[in-house]
Each structure stands twice: as C-alpha cells, then as structure tokens.
Length: 285
View (cartoon, rainbow, N blue to C red):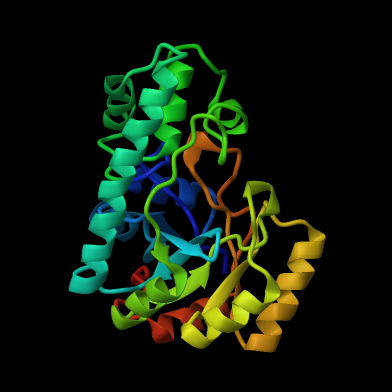
C-alpha cells in the first residue's frame, strides 16, 4: 500500500482544493492520503466526498500550530472528533490570532513594498476562500505584485522567520495540544521534527516529555530531514516506542513536494486507526 499522511489544500495554505487533492492522490496511485490543513478541519467534508467517488482511502486530520520552549512545533493530529468543544475553541484562538499576525506583517511590508491587506485577502479568496490565513498568502500577494518570483523567494527573505517583517502568532503549548488532541480522540504525531533549515528543532530530551504527555509518533521520512536526522529520529522513536511515519507535506504548486515522495507503512496506519475516534475512510471492497 502507498500511504501519504501529510497534505494541504486551499482550506489553509495549499493551492489545490480538497477534492483536487484526492484526485491527485488517485493519479499518484496512492491507496490512502491524509488531509492535514493548518489548524482547521473545514476541508474534511469535500475530501470525504471525493474519496468516496475516487475510491481512495482518506485519513482526516490537521496540522496544529504549537510551541515548545522556544521552538515552533507542528503537530499532526489524525482521526479526532472535529466537534470536540475544547479543541475546537483552541483552534478558533489560533486562527483568529493568525489573522492579526498577517495584518501586522502586511503593515510592515507596505512601508517598503506595494502590498495591501486587500491583496492578501484576494489571494486567499482566489484559493477557494482559505480558512486559515498564513504567510503563504502574503507570499502569493508578493508574487502577484512582482516583488518576488515565487513563494520560496518570499520565505527565504522578506517573510522569513525572525526577519525584518516577521511577526509571531499565538501557538498552543505542545504538551497542552497533545492533551487536547487525545481528549478529542485524536492521534498526535510530530510533523518534520528534524527540519533544522526551518529554525530551532527540539532537543532529544523534549521527545521524552512529549511522549509522556501522550505523543503517538514522529514524522521521520520527510524531504526536510537529512540522513543524520532520519537516523536520530528513528532511534528516538524506537527508544520511546513511538510510531514512525513518512509523508510528502504536499502543498500543490506552493512547494516542490510531490504526493507519495515519502510513505507510511500499512501497519503504522493500522496502529493510528486503532487509536483514533473517527476512523479511516476506506474504499468499498
């Protein structure tokens, strides 16, 4: 089986709709794909309908913005109940703060470049009404204005973390996020925890604390991990009895990542499914 457990759509910062994600997963000959938009489940219904039509297995999830002792940590959450009140309320807080953060970054950029809030909103609307605003929408507005050539150039310079125009946004403490996800029947897995090029990464001792809080697994096989990080994370997962996943982190045209470039083993998906509240949508046999 070919299983890819990390992909984004226009519900957050991807460039393809939830239905098109599933269609492209079919074209890539994936047996199972996960929809994991940032801090939202708004794309689940459309993706589920497309999966039923296409005959592709679907894991419903999201990627949650969290913070652990100075490190930005992305937490993949699989198969949770989307109507859980505590988790849903926390996601509203995250998304609302993202809007203020984007406004503040645009205000800074507008002092030096021809970009407005309306330009960014137009990019989000052009992506089928993105529900979670973020830096990629600023990048797309900068591309549209001819300031940069593509998202990669924007992220490398103007909107890079810690740069002149960067503004932080609210993130849930990682241990709290794990607790919320588990209480909602979800399965929490750290996304690309060894991606050093993105910024500070977690030290080894942090994984012990997060495993004790209920962490289920590590996304080990990812294009942002070099061989040393794969070896390190594999060893940490073995020591802490954590699941090992592999994923593309697909964003459509927003990133070079391609569906199916890294995969998850079927027994790992079975273990995730056994812990989750909502179950994997599988094609009828």
